[in-house]
Amino acid sequence: MTAPIKNIIVGTAGHIDHGKSALVEALTGTHPDRLEEEKRRGITIDLGFAFAEDEGVRFGFVDVPGHERFVSNMLAGAGGLDLVLLVIAADESIKPQTREHFDICRLLGVKRGVVALTKSDLVDADTAELARLEIEEYLRGSFLENAPIVAVSAKTGAGLDDLKRELRAAATQTSGKDASRPFRLPIDRAFTIRGFGAVVTGTLISGSVGADAHVELFPSRQVLRVRGVQSGGKTATQAVAGQRTAINLAGIEHTALKRGMVLAAPGKFRTTQRIDARLQLLSTAAPLKQRGRVHFHSGTSETVAEIFLFGTKEVGARELAPGQNALVQLRFQDEMLLLPGDRFIVRQFSPVTTIGGGVVLDAVARRYVARDRGRGAFLETLERGDRADILAAMVERSARGMRIDEIEARTGWVEAEIREASQKLTALNRVKNVADPLLLVSMVAYDDTRKEIARSVDLFRKGNPLSPGISREDLRASIGRLVRPETFRAALEELAREKKIDVQGELVRPAGSAVLLDTEEALAKQQIEGAFAQAGLAVPTVKEVLAKLSVDPKRAEQILQILLREKVLLRVTPELVFHRDALAHLKVRLASYKNEKGERIAVPAFKDIAGVSRKYAIPLLEYLDRERVTRRAGDERVIL
Ligand SMILES: Nc1nc2c(ncn2[C@@H]2O[C@H](COP(=O)(O)OP(=O)(O)OP(=O)(O)O)[C@@H](O)[C@H]2O)c(=O)[nH]1
Ligand SMILES: [Mg+2]
Image (cartoon, rainbow, N blue to C red; front, side):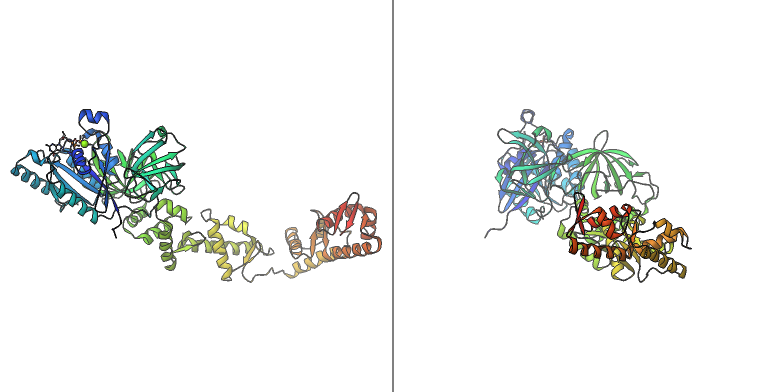
């Protein structure tokens, strides 16, 4: 049985002309420089790629330019690497871009690598030893402190086997990228292939993708179909995280695609122009001013950002000192797709040099305000907490609560992870899940909603003692706008289950509270009912009846409403109200008419048996039609 294949991206780093591209060729057989200009000038300008497979490890090499003018191209390649191959020429030792590239790797959180001491054929043993000592000294205290330093020559082939062995060893210690997470591919090249159309390439940093999948292009948010994929330079059914990947896209011109755009799982993510982050400033940088402008690089994208400092220890600090770190807000000139945990680099606006980098904590940050006391603690939880802590902090900071899709978009977590964290928190009573699939609100916000509902129901009751309750709709409107319908419903139902309130159809009232009438009101109720009962079908107007009562008009109207709700009285038209017995009696008379005279009845005959004038007859017939007691047939009615 062979061990599963591991996909590892190795990125070169190092000063111009130190032999990066030559070394990649020596290791893979492919010279990574592809542009005419690169070949002519003998320097690398843009990213180059090559592949090698070695004992269960598939290496994708990303070769970067060493020239200081092309650091932004280097950054587009450095975003996705698992291992750095730090290339230092034995005859020159450490030079400015050795330092800058190495700083970038550190700031991007690269964890492992190998140092290649190249051009070893050009120096004697003492010079090589001196270079080695210098490099060891330089790397002390960094992630490469204990990394192997392998003397090699791309020219003679000396040391290449050792270097391959060390790369393999480093690869086995590297965890690689996670294919089970949502798909994300920062685009580093876009071109067209005759007969195929648009093709993009990039390092697949997360998830997997196959032919016929749909992917979303950021920042334009077009959804596109994948025609085919290649990984590691070969056609494949599926490309997985950690592979160099080429994707042939349907429905778009290659001219509409370029480096810096991102392909991602469709419908999952949003773009952002504002993030909160931890920023580390290099010790070689100048102090960073409040609202300083920088070039921002993450993945293959870059934009201009304005930096707001809020995490410095000294309250009111207006700048960040070299070598220090702080919690910051970054505001971008362009829409970016970023997720928590994404690393980034910032470069001075002018002259352009690398000054620092950091990690995204909150990709959907609230607008910066100078005094936001909760934010520091919140960001520290995002930075250090486990998934449940982070979820609780996010839910507690959002007044409306968070739906599962909102959590996914904001964190990049998969559903199972969200559910697990949510179960933990609901068991601890820190959050309440009020809907399916998943809407989490903080326990504090949920309890507030319950209290507000109970208060509102009571208040209505006090102001409207004759009303059987407040309607759900009015109750909902009386509760804060920040309460979502699902939260309202869950709280209402829970209060009803606990018998704190009574919910009957659309009406809500305090538990156990029937409408209580005082003697005067009870009398008025009898009088109203009596008036309509006596009138039979030739009813008086409501106004006339109510005017005779001793209670005030508003209460009289409410008492009428009670009778209507109890269905003792029935409203046939806005003006006409009948007693239920009168209507029942009419139906009996119609039934006997049908028995004796047949099913058809004309209006005059109806007036006779009802004993009413035309004024009542027509509305009554229309009412009976609606009730399906009769059906209109020309000028007559059919008794059903
Ligand atoms: N003698 C000798 N020459 C080397 C060796 N490696 C590279 N070279 C030469 O050094 C020059 C620069 O090599 P490249 O591989 O292009 O250097 P690079 O680091 O890729 O340069 P940039 O991409 O422009 O930063 C070329 O002429 C190579 O032939 C080596 O091990 N020995
Ligand atoms: Mg090169």
